[in-house]
Length: 133
Image (cartoon, rainbow, N blue to C red; front, side, top):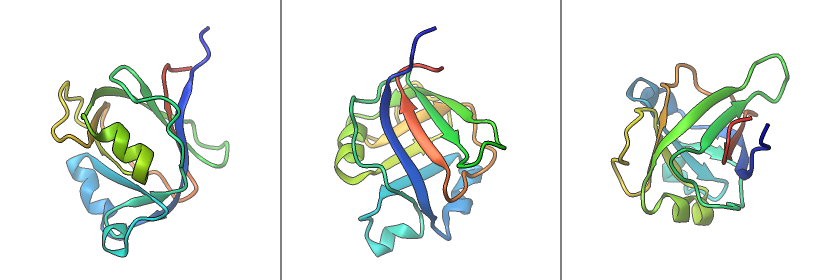
């Protein structure tokens, strides 16, 4: 078994009041703790700070609960926009599209599959990994 390489990790600290409206469209917007007030309503605000290696198609996203009663949710990255890594590294900002597209719809977008059915909760851990455990 290959040990996955952690590329980025954060804990969700806030969920903006408008975030649930994006779920039916398969979109989650993340911002670091320094997100301006006008963006917090539409974002999952987190404490991640260091991108150790660039995200790439083929990597994985893992959501896990802060308690062990929930199994982790795994998602496969299918496309990474050309500015997604810089946005994540500099601002903690990333826009996830749960659409499985092979080309990112916007420069800062990352497409993943499968679809997301339930929003992660405050306190949930998200990790980008080079390979699934």
